[in-house]
Each structure stands twice: as structure tokens, then as C-alpha cells.
Image (cartoon, rainbow, N blue to C red):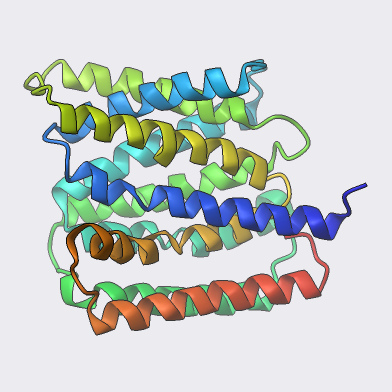
Length: 285
């Protein structure tokens, strides 16, 4: 029988893989010459089809946490896309990844989960790490985009909270619902936008994003959240920006800046130490 500790370790590994898959977005989105809403629509449509084929036994029960998680994730994807168009990418990433701070408070009040001091300390160092990584790209102004990015941090947090509320049931329905909502919303918006130019690179890239970046990652997240807390899952998710310079280096040969390396190392160390300390205390992640 798999013990609790093994389940927790499995959850951590699945969440790390999830963050890794999320990180390929920047690289492949740059290869697609479409409007962001066209990309979000086709990406989520591909992800929804993948999930249905991969899982098969899907039953919508439409409980409050199930629907709330689906809406929260859909809003997060749409808000983040919009924020990236109305503020700098660095601002959007920094502001959205304030989510762990929000999740700590939401977990305590809504999930009644104990929050260790190591999680609070790690959040502080994670924020410092993100600021260091993107310090030379942060910009003042862009009020609308910055507000959207902050709102996406709240919806991102609620997504983890409502998924965690379903730890004793199936969570994949919430994920599938989020992609269905995203497809419908982005399709309606796309009706008022120019028709995208179809070319092989754009099609292949959006399919990779749909299948792996948010399709497979959605399945892994739905499994991971059953064994680790919303706070731990959100903390691990923060390592996603750390992978981005790696992809740029592999694809374009662009050497990461020294502040990127320092900030990335700080984030990884903070997440790793927090995870190990929580595990040793044998608390519920």
C-alpha cells in the first residue's frame, strides 16, 4: 500500500513536471503569428480533446468547487494573455506570481490547512528571486495590464484552492470545464478579430501547446493536487519562469543574464528547502 509520504513525493514530482510543461509556452507562442485569443482558443480546444481521449471516464457533477475551479482557471488563462498584451511580459509574470502569497491566506481560511513558517519564508525569497530575474525588464506604467495581471494572480490562487477542495473526488472535470469555457469565450472574441493566417509552423506549435503545455500538464496537476496542499502546488508552480531562459538558450543559443541565473537559483533553492522541510515535518502538503 502506498503510504502518505510516497503519495506526497509523487505529488511534488508531478507538480514539477507540470511547471516544466507550462514553461514551453513562451517559446512556442513566439512561433505562432496569430492573435493571442486565436491561440488561446485553439490551444484550449486541443487540450480539451486531448483530455477527453486520455481520460475517457469523465463525469460532470457540477459541484461548486468543480465549477469554481473551472471558471478560475479559464479567467487566469484569458487574463494572463490579455495582460501580456497590455503590459510588459516581465510585469505580467511578476504580478501573477504573487499568487503564492494570496494562496497562503486563502488556504488558511478556506481549506483550514496549516501553513508552515517555511512556506511563508520561501514566498518572500521567491518574490525576491522573481524581481531579480526580471529587474532589468520591469517597467512602471501600463496600469491596465498590471491590474489584469494582479487579478490573474487571484484567479490563479483560487484555481488551486478549488482544485484542492476536490482532493477526495475527481478534479479533471474542473480542468476540462476551464478549457471549454476558454474556447467559447475566446471564440466569441475572435469573431471580431482578423482571421488568422494558417501555416505549418503555427499549426504545429499550437498543437504542441494544446497537447503538452496545457493538456498533459492539466492531467498531471489534477493528480498532484490530491497529494499536496494548494500552497505547495502554487510554490512549485513558481519555478515555471526559471525554465524559460533554458528554452531560449536551447532554441536560440541566447546565454541567460547573470541576474536571471541568480534569481532562478534563489527561486529553486527556496522552493526546494520549503518542500523538504514540510516533508520532514510530516505535515499535509
